[in-house]
Amino acid sequence: MKSCPFENLLLPYVQRELSKSDRFRLLSHLPTCQDCNQTLADLQTVDSSLRRHQREKAPHDLYVSYVEGLETRFRPEPFLKIRWRQLTELAGKLFLSSSPSFRLARAFAILLVGVLLGRQLFYPSTTSKINAFDSQQTATTLTKDDIQFIADYVVQSELLLLTIANSSADEPTDDLIYLNKDIAQTLLYKTAKVQRKAIALEDDVIIIFLNRLELVLLEISNRDDEEIRTTFRDIKNMIKESDMVQKSRRLQHRLETTLAESA
Amino acid sequence: MSRTAESDLKLVQSAKAGNKTAFGTLVKKYQQKVFYLAFDLVHDYDDAKDIAQEAFIKSFEKLQQFEERAQFSTWLYRIAVNLAMDQYRRRKRRPHESLDDNIHEIERQKNVEQMAEGQRSDMELQNSAQRQQIDKALMNLSPNQRAATVLKYFHQQSSKEIAHVLGCSESTARIHLFRAMKNLRKHLKGIQESL
Ligand SMILES: [Zn+2]
Image (cartoon, rainbow over all chains, first blue to last red; front, side):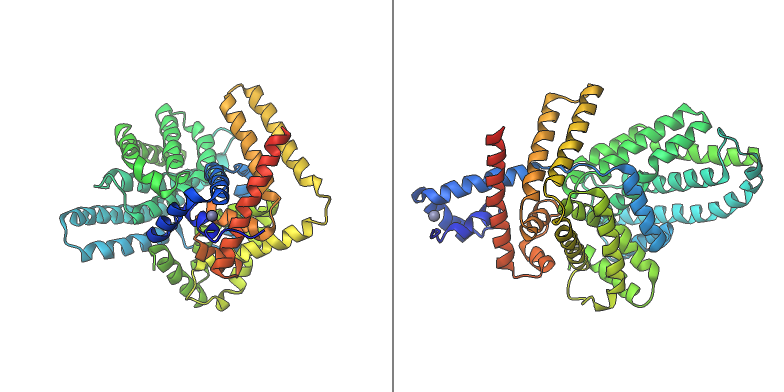
């Protein structure tokens, strides 16, 4: 069967990849050709089904074991080092610009760097304080590893919350989306474990905070860049209205106290 | 060059110069994408995990051969797609129904669970049936056609990128995609009529 010479324009047309002139040629041809009309209808049906298609989510345990396997084999740069590199790259760009919005963003970048430095200082003291705690662990108390695990999670999530809450624009830049998504995905896989452990702290505010944080992480990591752009303002409001940065500090404070009490 | 490609290139250069953790960072960045690409091609999460792991191991071993004119992501996808196709060829020797049965069994169990939970609406059940139909139709395509389709629709690759991943010309990539779409239409029609 000999096919119509216009046939090869149909798929690019459906996928919105056709140039203006080709689109015009095709649209003039369509009323005269039954075959092309039929093919076009078929392609459009399949195109829209595929666009709507959502795959089955992977079993959580399987995915975690996959990621952990990779982490053992290929150790990534330490988390703070990656953020540091991304932040300095970002800051480097900001310092080159002199527009007012960039100067605001610059102030915010410096704030983040401050947070990072503070945390790096926070870690060593944590480790030394909790040594005495090892001997008295029970099922309901938190072990040294648990506290370290939760502390990592909370400090990293505070960075994310601050990044979003302090961003001056309602539309995030590509840099910001990339940075946020990366952090959110990393954190999301630790969320269930953190929530389980945090029950031992017996603090409802912290539990609610962790649930809300999970929502924020889901909002960011499960969406494509375009969707994040449109929902960014909502996410930002949620963080501000529920005072999440303060609650994150409260949790960090609780972890410190728990360590001090047990020492 | 896009910002992502630019920062990938820096990491690749650093990894080639012997910085192992730079490669670890690339792994972290692409682990999710490669995993789901493998799943889209073989439709089995256990296999997808093996394929994705293997893809990272292979790409690390062959990193010195990676030419920096290309994008790292495309090169990585190509390795993953080739591994998935090998896997598919091996699996083809197994009885063909096993895949369909598997999908049906998983789908059936899930529907039972969903109804037991009493949380799912009719709409969601319908969507689940539709998803199953598309999965089945995709698995009936030739490996090249399936790869072109999932790269285009589930991994947002352009025809040019698909051509690089499949190691063919751009026009061949378009032909794979066109035939895939026509075959999908035929399969989906067939499934709907048999219901
Ligand atoms: Zn025609």
